[in-house]
Amino acid sequence: MLAKLRKRPLTISELAEPFSMSFAGVAKHIDVLTSAGLVRKVRDQEDGRSFRLELQNQSLLEASAWLTYHQEFWTNKLDRLESFIEEQDHDKPGRKSRKKN
Image 1 (spheres, rainbow, N blue to C red):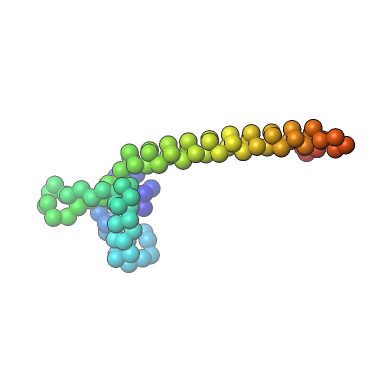
Image 2: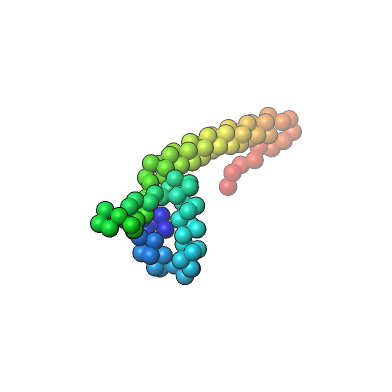
């Protein structure tokens, strides 16, 4: 759904079209996306009654930045742990150092 909204704002019917689920099911998904701040409803300027769904890029950018930070954080921690373990293993007397294949 988010990928479809990347292209342009859509009505619920347009968004639901390719999915094999009920309109109510799509509406529930949209409620979750809206409450997560990923999608917002914008009133149609022509009739004022209907609305379109619009992707909230800022929320996605914030989520992406959070994920990137934590991926780098844990990758660095795990790399340091691996180096520490290899160093400890290498320093043990009577042990042959393991070579990576």
